[in-house]
Image (cartoon, rainbow, N blue to C red; front, side):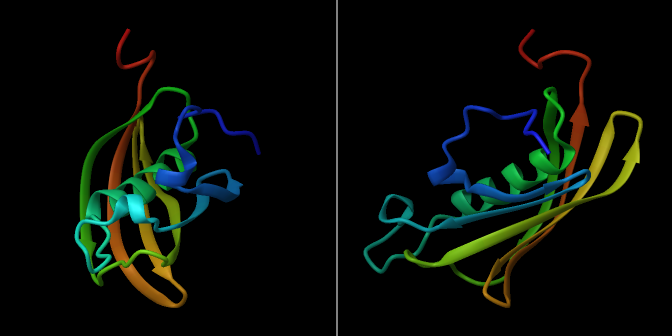
Length: 127
């Protein structure tokens, strides 16, 4: 399946798609030194959020998809060097609204979970 959205994403920062199907996406990345929030190697949560968000955008996979809301729980800390996978599944579609369930894993441990509410617009949000 082809990617139809978010073509200019920096995949080092937001992850690389490894499985893309209608209504589903899995994205992986390795947390790098650039993501560290402190000298112990704690990764800033914004990067983990970005990974989950990118997976959700790809699960919807429309050129005009935007994020409207997020309800997420950070369950465990992420450290520099951790290899993460984010899975996103469209769980509900009502008109333009797409609810996407997301989970971020390190091996078998769930690091983040929740849902993102996405909207598919008629045109680019900046038009």
